[in-house]
Image 1 (cartoon, rainbow, N blue to C red):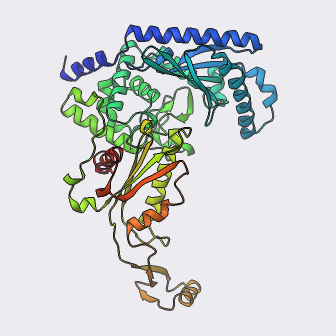
Image 2 (image 1 turned 90 degrees about the vertical axis):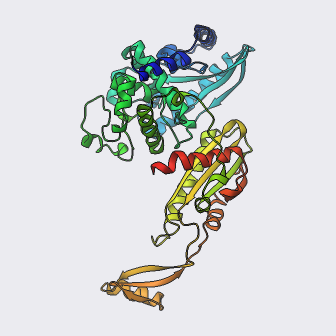
Image 3 (image 1 turned 180 degrees about the vertical axis):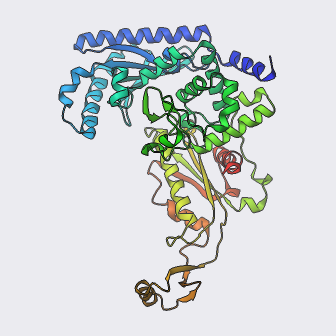
Length: 484
């Protein structure tokens, strides 16, 4: 047994759930199923099945101390289809949302009568579902109860799902049936690697979204085992995984795949890229970390640690001048962390787009890179920014039309009497709106910060205030910039 396999075995022993944990989850599922069934009978509501999905459900690929439960409740689509017939896709989505919302409020939430259930809430972005906390001994277990249309697999393959979650139970059955126990164990070790390197799920520190559980399961299924995956991980960018064996040029013709950095198609729905949300930053960082692990195998690559707080005094002063921080405090706990996260990424994109180029497309502050890091429990959200040229000339040369273009040249000359000619074009010296990046930064964000986020600090990095801000800067400097 080589050292890599020895490490995998050690990690697996550390992250495999105990029988006590498995029994606890199973007991809660049985209790929930009984309550939902009793209330359904009272209300004369028909359903097809109640089944635990996700890693703690039928997949059984969860890690130790992962108690979250996803309970899926199937509905017979044939009972709802008559009222949806003839509706456009958007209207069908609205109508099904109404039906799901009504069932969540009148059936699901009203079923949760035991004292162990705390604060049941109706939540939804794309799809309404109920979330509730279950308190037992020293654990608070988060439970999501999700309604879905129980469609045949062939229906989904031919026509696609009716709602966003209709595929999910088939994902569970695919993993349950297609992965061996050893492969499920490899999934556990792989998920631990992604978590240890802060590139997992929608709380990924590197990029907006890291690798999700289903993508990890499909990677192991495709490559057979973890060591083979690690050996081929760097090739994922140029070697898409497609369970219908389509060549890369055919996959790239699919419009909604064209902007995706890596492609792992869904064996349940060939028109879905499971990896569409996985950040380029997360993939690049994980590629580097896997390379380092293969060169120098060490269990430390799998240990969960807090991100380091950057010590700004150890950074070269010429670099410090190029680093900026926006530190925020969330004042409304009802706003979901993904909404705050997405808003900050949108602000970061705007800073990059408008900061790198003037409106005329002339260069502005040079290369700009950013990263978002948040600690939801502390209500702290941060945006760290690298700006290549934080101070630039107050004016720049703006290029006009070609001299030979008489119509546009005359208009340009009339509007800009101080023009001059150079390299076959008309030019004008233009005063910039901003020559100091920090001034630009303060102005561009002032109308973009949502009301629930209070600004704690906008400054050059040497004036950073919070520990989470220092971690945000560390992510940018050590986990993002080296791979841009």
